[in-house]
Length: 157
Image (cartoon, rainbow, N blue to C red; front, side, top):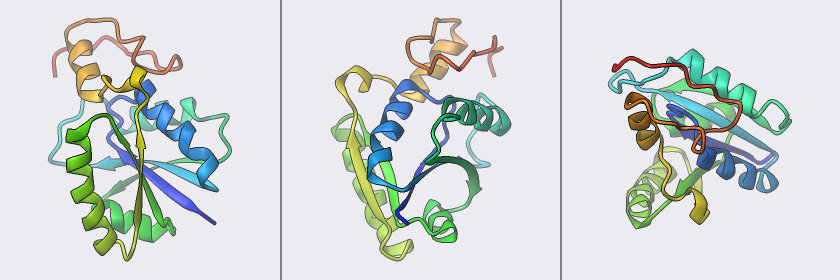
């Protein structure tokens, strides 16, 4: 079985994330959308909220599982039998960063391969960081998040 992991913080999930997952589905038997828990990183939304959103967005996709993990992504992949990582690339800066991480994951993850999918132009400007800033500023994020996601009012955290 070809299992791939699409890791991220998904704080919150964006339409760009959804596009990457949907484009990866024909390539793999299963795609695990995995929320990485990093105690050093301050998130806007709770782990439970992010998992709930992911489960709702991908409810109709039999080939998508949602999970969370702590520690190294490569170790999580090895634990669940995933041989592939999926990463979306929006620009050259993403590539430079992700290439280094992919090479490390290949070694640490015992030949764990990373598959890069280049963002469609319509999504290349969208990031969770930008969406969080819009949320904090009281902006309308509906064009940037899946329609299933209803962002609650957030006080500046």
